[in-house]
Image 1 (cartoon, rainbow, N blue to C red):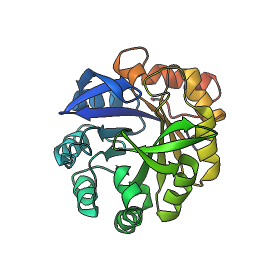
Image 2 (cartoon, rainbow, N blue to C red):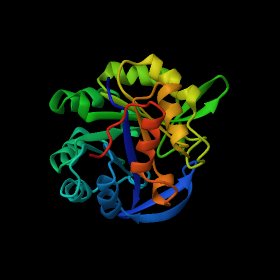
Image 3 (cartoon, rainbow, N blue to C red):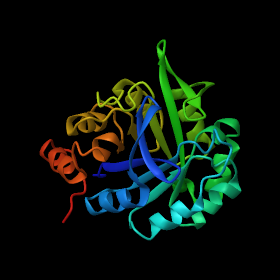
Image 4 (tube, rainbow, N blue to C red):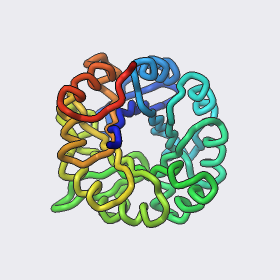
Length: 253
């Protein structure tokens, strides 16, 4: 049985971790490397670091973050934000990251997904999909949720898989920062449509929400942010509760 993964997400702006609601009203949550060190000690299975202003500021993600994190945590981690070319992705991966997350750049040129995968393996390419409920489906947004991309989330997930993505990072903009639970309908629709792992993101408020993402949304991993950053719970506590609910997770020895 494949173990479900618990993945802290650190949204980084100017080297500091921030958290908001529906991608707005950002508040300071701590230092990126310091929080990574803390969550690693508490049992994080992986990490996602997103430079949330890089794309809109038309700059590249700093490689220094990947280098600093690789010296502190010894589980896989993904870096995204501002990665617009093969050269950008290569620099991040060579600096120590295990994966890169593509959003806006993949929407603009899907071939980039395969180009990175051919050199570093499909497992190194995560396509991040930011989606908002629209009618009976979900519209995809780019540029940190600022621009509608003209694609349906489920269809784009399938297209990304076909282009060579190894994983989907699926964020519900509607649920982001709400602590009201993941959008299970969206998560299940995308998880059932693709054969690659899906990370559920946006809305975690409790261990029950996370269990639902796995059992009802068919997600392979769950992304957490605010409930960790502001001390509502810990990774260790969440894993203990998930285990009690029958969810297979890797617990600390």
